[in-house]
Image (cartoon, rainbow over all chains, first blue to last red; front, side):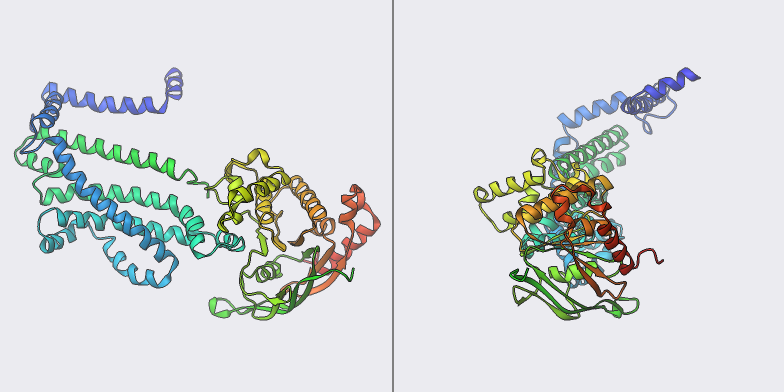
Length: 263
Length: 262
């Protein structure tokens, strides 16, 4: 018993993560080899790997895996960048000017707790079933976390930070550029990351409701045809791309706002 | 002493905090009058909550007085001006730029070309003993080093007066004492006008050439003193704090500001 404890204490955290992943994979293999569950409910690992290969090369219903990822990413990133471009200035402005905040806050507070799919129906009614309504939906989903992060970041700036700049001769514009913007940047970044997570899950859900391409659609369509191998492959791809996007954002954060947590 | 030029004048200054902001109406300052001469090192001594910081903020132009006025070079002050630098109790260094860039903040926003400001920034960096930390980030420095950076940042901007709001209050005793030596040396060697707020009697006695005592809220100026202990410390007489003269004055100051009563 003592020995086991000593071994666990010495094991590095990442090794433990790898072990837990291996246990899940092992369980999957055991289940499919022993035939505990049917091929439809739990497809064997090799058929998932094969369908990953075949949807990458031959494609699934008209376009390859990369094509589906591309369709999804086009919607997601168009909306994401539009949200950053508008939510950051509006949020920073609302944080500083009470009247702007009073104008925007009721709308945003109303939309924020709504599940995006609830207003997606309205957007489809207005903008049709194409990319327009999806981008609009994702834009709204991405907008709120960034906006809220900006407003709260501005309200957190200690008065002495701004007073110091003023006593050193800074005007409004310089205070904005040299104090408010860098001070709020770490929180804005956190908002951007939250927004990406929110946008990503909304994307998949929206594609499942109404689309003819994209990762969400591919998974839903495959499940309609009981192609659980494709469903599993699609989910794995979504998971990995989600992790990758977050990793990239974290890396950017580390490089762009190294003073995060030092304020 | 009469040839000294008046730099700032505080006349009949009152500050009342409005009851509308919640709570009852509080009088923070009551009829404060003070003349500050060029080259003075004024230490304002008072119990916490006596309105010292309010006085400093009004002099800086950060807060408006309810009535009365503050004149600088004969002109009434309106708002903040870089003529009056402020060093706050907790240093407000910007963590996104290096120590050197923090010190250069004033010249940078005035768009002074770097070729002109660089020499001066280096001079003050050296003066506060941080030349080896020029490229460090503020969060990599100790509390004393941060406050030294804040001091250099204020000095490099060529202010007519430096307002210090309990600048050493958050530091440990050893660091505080070395900071006091530093600021005394700066004052002796470059004779800027300094206005320092403190609740530490010894700090006031060891630094200022004038000590102004303030009462409990509403803050009024009770009495002014002229001292020269700081000169004697500068001349190497470290034991001045054990002299009878020092002890007597210390006792008087303590009684005036009401320490030990509570």
